[in-house]
Image (cartoon, rainbow, N blue to C red):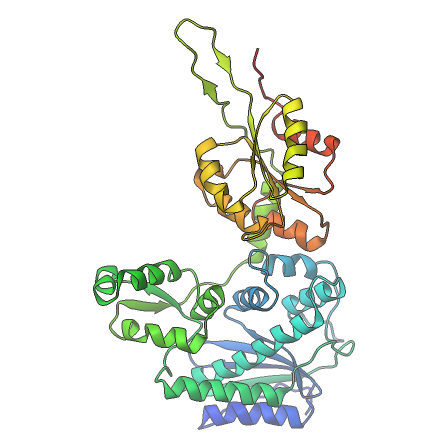
Length: 420
């Protein structure tokens, strides 16, 4: 196979897709292939000696990697932002001629070399992306011609991970056959369900089913993303929705891709901006008594009672009010009730972790400006980036020290007025 660009179309696009991948595998092709259909959808697949190195849905590459990182590694909040930062650590190119390539893949490789993700996790991500890409080609090629644009290249070094092309083909064909068997051939798992007629949906379901559907179908996640979120099988989930899709109660739409640069800018700006202070809480005194201003309130969410007592001693000695919350599930109700001025939040807790709580706090409009200081025994790139992504203001390592806590108090509560 030479370096010239060439195109190929076939009367049977589905068989052509499989045959083309098999040809690339058997011929030990090295380079990249761009595949497109008449409707405009396009994919890119890189090969090394016939094995798949990476594969991308060019319409939603960031959504793909965000979802697979959440599914196979558990990066629910950081995902694509972490890849974006990790990819910028090096300027390496996969191909010798310096052609721009998949930065998400480069970011994942960097994370693996930093031991932030395991080799097995990266293999699982690339495997899933490979068979999903072939599945999508089989589906989108229904009644359309496939255009293949291939370019032979030489990798600058042997890829650390490659995927067996034949195995990916076999898995994709099985999935596609099951999809067709259940009459889902025209339902793309890359589409996003939106409830258009909630009253009709309520009438056709039980209250519990309706509540579950409304909770899951937010119009912000694709079918594939929903199944990762609820940890369910894609085929079963789609089958459960098909009757509502066919009757128009639920509509399938296209979502734009995630834009990591904007997200990155947002949390870096938020981290660098001085957080504005809410007005101090005022205790109303008895009539004609001198007016007293309450000291600002600091809350520590940590399941360790020794940490809470240590924090209480440091914070109250500094002249602030203090509340400890050891049950993370009760954090939000207590925060809404007390409206603190500063929150210290432990990262590792049973039932719910600090990332989840921080994200929940930031989604409440009254708490968007409250400083949140993460407390953790870890100090890795992943933890720092994840903390910023979910809205943390600062990151403090355990074991905690009086100087570190007082520094945070001075930084965020420097205008405190104490009782006179």
